[in-house]
Amino acid sequence: MAAFRFERVAMLLWFDIIALYAIWMLMPYLSSVWDVSISRAAAIVNIFWSFVLLSPFFIAILIDTVMCYYWSVIVSTVSLSAGLGFLAMSTPPVLAHISGNCSEYSAECIGQGQRVLLYMSLPLIAFGMAGHFDSLYEFMREQFRKGEAIIDDRISMEFDGLVLRFSGLSSSVFTLIAVLGLPYIKPWSLRFGIPAICSLVAAVLFFSAASTFKFIGRPIGGVSPFMTFFKVLFAAFSKLFYTIPTDAWELYEIQDNSQLHFVPHSRSLRWLDKAAIVIPKPIPEQTWRLCRVTQVEEAKAITRMIPVWMTFVLCGVVSSMPYTFFMEQLDHMNPKIVGVKVPILVLIWFQSKVIQHCTLVCIRIQPNLFVSRVRMSGFVGIVISMIVAILCCITCAKVESQRLDHVRKQVGSLSMFMLLPQMILLGVFRFIFDVSVLCLFSVKDSDVVMDRYLPIFISCVLGVGCLANSVLVFVVGKISERGGKMNWFQHDLDQSRLDKYYYTLAWLMAVNLVAFIVVAALHRFNEWKLEDEQAAAQSGQPYVSSNQECCFCCCC
Image (cartoon, rainbow, N blue to C red; front, side, top):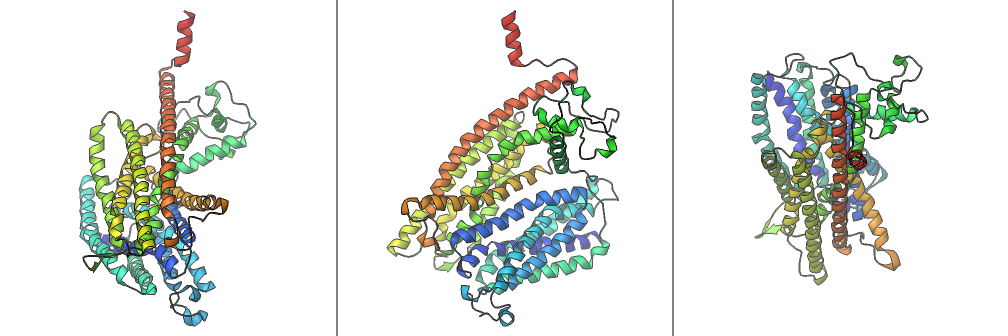
């Protein structure tokens, strides 16, 4: 029975693979069928993928507070099926007889109804995909729990065996079907319609067995670290004109509960201490205006990390290039090798495999290289990943310049396998970056940012990078046309100067690398001071900074 339930859930993942590779074709669809300029098409695709990457943040808040994995899977399944259906219906032939438009795949056949359906479908698909990626695995684990008990070793082995059985060979088969089959389907209505039908079939089969699934409530007891952070900010700003007490013992803390987690008070970001000021009001009436010192200190730790995370936004810009410009380049290049036409999705699949396998290798090797200095390995890894990103941008510019030379000289299209080096570099960049960020923040900050939320933070910063890519394209385009010069982003890729944009990204990433080194060094220096201060507070001794020690020595 367990295997039967598992198979119904696994089908959602299998058909998600087909939907994912179909969505990869969105950029060529907008530019070729809708006749949208590459900058506008890139903006639409970037906004879509930003929704996919940012949605886990909001889904995690819902799961921790008002929802559970059971309902998250149900809502995301409905959202994905509806979104894929709307996307298929947005193609010209589907509603041609109803809307009165022509049925050809051209911009003249795109009416207002098709536009509405497309823009409705993208957020629904984004929420559905993010919900499945964030909730399906944990939902499957819940089905192997005995009530609310933690999974024991025997059940864990059974679960891992089923995961290997259903996600190994089966996922490879569906990936093969998507990569090799979808590009050969010429009608876009079928190219988007087949994933929609598959998603609907998987949803029907899943809901037919919904009554057999175990319903387990909120997995984290209704407390969200994200909501706690926002609560501290709200409480601090609501007491903006209150005076912070000089004695930290006057701040609010629950001292008589041994089951609660405690963090000693620190003297950094003192303005957040206002959230723990006790005002003359009954404490139950101060739900959003009073926080514990521990909650304030956890919010301080997250706030101190924000400058470091801001330097990762440009990494998100670089990682968003395959969604947009890489796909457009592949669509304008020669897909044949030795006379055989190779689907363009093969290179996307190859890049995902590079990230997947290299990440597994890095997870096994990196902790062993720096057992006692995991933070340092994370810092070095991020620096290396940014250097690889710079090399990737330069390689992209070189290949695009070569492709444009072929276009100008009319000597035929450049082979799409010329993009292979930049695909490999981008894959290497992504796996080093992801693992290194986990190493950088998963030691000291594990009490504040649990391992479950670190991947969500990485996803969010990459999502912000997708949005920033759209803004950067607009800004760079406006700057490039100053003085009567040609805008780098024309309607067609062959008329644009994408190579210059890649060079711009390269030097921006170089500046960002220097900024990261400075900000990360300052962050680590402040963390050392806080560790000494909190150690002194726990031992009951007054904290003396290094500057004060120097002053004492001089006085002596």
